[in-house]
Each structure stands twice: as C-alpha cells, then as structure tokens.
Length: 236
View (tube, rainbow, N blue to C red):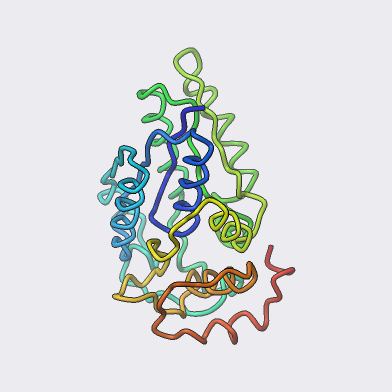
C-alpha cells in the first residue's frame, strides 16, 4: 500500500514514518508550515525524509494559520507548562488543524496515486485535541470517501490512535527511529524546555517504555512533579 505520512518532525510522526518504511509502504512525507512558533520541527521532518530517501513536501499554510488565532502555538500566547491533562493545555489547540492538513494530504495522495495517508495521532492526544480522536478519524474517512468518489480511493491510517505515547516509543525503538533527531517542544528554543505539555509527555513516554531518552532538556526533572498527579493509567 503506497503511503504518504503526515510528518511534523516530532517523535510520533517520525516513528510512524520509520514503521511505514520498514513495512515497505512509504512513498513520501508531507509537512505543514502553519506559522507554528516551533517551526524548527520541520527541519527534523526534512532530516527524516533524507534518511529514508523519500520525497518531502512542505506545504505553506501560514496564511491560514494566521487566522486561527488564540492558540499558544500560533499566537502571542504563552505556552503553558505541565501535564496534558491540565485545563491550561487547551491553549495549545489550533482549531481544525488536523482536518485542514489531512484534507490537503488526501488531495496530494489522490494526485500522486497513493493508496493511503498515515497520521500519528495517539491515545494521549484525546484529552484536548478533538481532531485526534477515533471518532474524528472515522468521520474524516467517510467524508473523503465521498469527496474522492469516482476519482481515487485513499485510506486514512492511524495505527497509534488507541495507544499511548509510551507504546509509540517502543514501536519506534523496534523500527530504529533515531529519537535524538526528532523535535517535540512547543516553545521552539535551542533545547527541549522539559516543561511544556509535549516535553513532559515525551519524557514520561521514554520512562514508561523503558527506553533511554537521548533528548537534552533545559529542565530534565520537571516532568516527575508534573505527572505525579496523573497516573499513566488515567490519561490513556
């Protein structure tokens, strides 16, 4: 099945790219510049494409992102520290982001005669990101079946939608993902901050998976206090 992976350059999507490559399904990566403050993640997506020797499409939708105001990822709003289960993390929502990106990715896949688009949404995203939930994935597939009816048949693959980030780390390790060459931090500094929701989740995932974390964090120990109130079993 010829598959295009939506790749941000983060741990999840790079691991998915390596999984698809191992299964000999990967034909390319697509990434999006939506004006995110952590745009440096796209450099890591490019490195992933180069290592896997596949085409990499970076699509500029910054003009659209500029209208999706109010998010800490695209606007002058402070990125909150702490666990993803905290109410403050709603500040990181970019409205309809995945729906917009996937619609473009499906158009690209149809034009290139690909069989599938793969996305690395996972169980830990379900708290605050409605367009990462199983219901959205199923509904989007139904919509695309109608949108491309008679022109193309493209399947939406979301193999991580019901699993934890720790499971993704384990899967990535199995397929040789170079974790040090992935970027998660929403603050986009020189190092991972170790305090924002995605840094905390990343650090916890390596711990739970029993895999060494090669990431250098500005605050390498903050995650312990952040996760102490949210046992892993409660945040799946």
